[in-house]
Image (cartoon, rainbow, N blue to C red; front, side):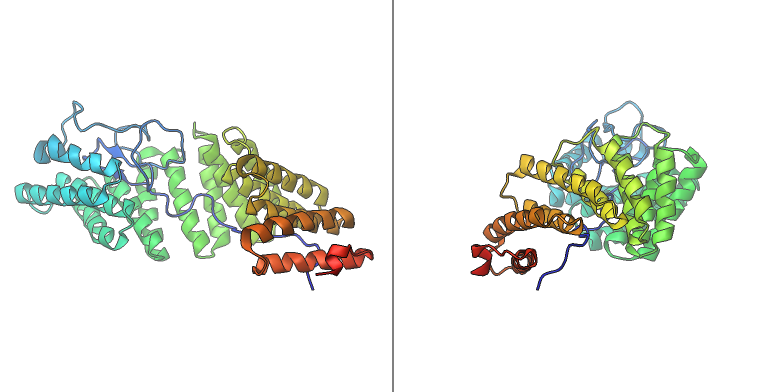
Length: 395
């Protein structure tokens, strides 16, 4: 038989800001081309960027051109032509070509300056960043470890360039599920940024996010929660994009659900929603996720009618974005059916389940496990009401 109406957990209970968000930047020393994340290098784009802070700049998004007036060791040594060509390849996703040129720059810098020089550290960082953006983490790791070593050797102890390479190293370790190594790198970077930038700098807050993500993956939920709350306190003081604040709050809510603290979870998701609605349109995946988690938390609190309103908002957004036959609509209708049954609205539960079955059967086929489960629920509901339809009786 099917299952009686119960709160249905979100399909993918996850962190909103995951550990694959890259905080490295394409380095020319301290005047840097920034890579927003594992994507393309962009300027002044309001997206989900987490970019590292240049040592002498409070701008986290603007690409610094290698031809700017300030001389750096990398400009002086490698020359603009080779660097610009490598950076252009990187911007356009031609990672193999970019990696080849950055490797060539490393060779040139070592030949001219020896193993330990700021330009060598910057060039190695760029090699590592290119491999990370290409998903070649095994190749990125040795280059990044060497970049950290060189920068520690030749730069001041609390150099922000060293911190950026440490963040990149922590990101690589995270993708390789080496949580302890990732935490060590992120915490070393955090120590530098706090000492150089102060406790309330957004770049410090972003490191708390990285640390929180790793701790979440390690199932250290309380420690992760504390780091996200520290990040949120900092980001609320700064002109960070609303969606980023919303994502941190979603992370807090996700952990509260994991800890079965449903009231606190619903409060966090409601606040997250307030921020996200300022930037996202109905049907945006992040909005759907937040509404889904909020609906689940409300249902677990027993606030079923409020939960039902959340699922109705999800359904409207899904229809607007994908159309009424979208498979996600079927999943949402099943959740609505569970709430209707919980509050005694059996007829509405049957109607939602029947709609869900039609959508899911068309999208997934009649023998899919989700379709079979939905069909069983529909038959059970019809039987429990006492007047099974001719269609249900014939199944």
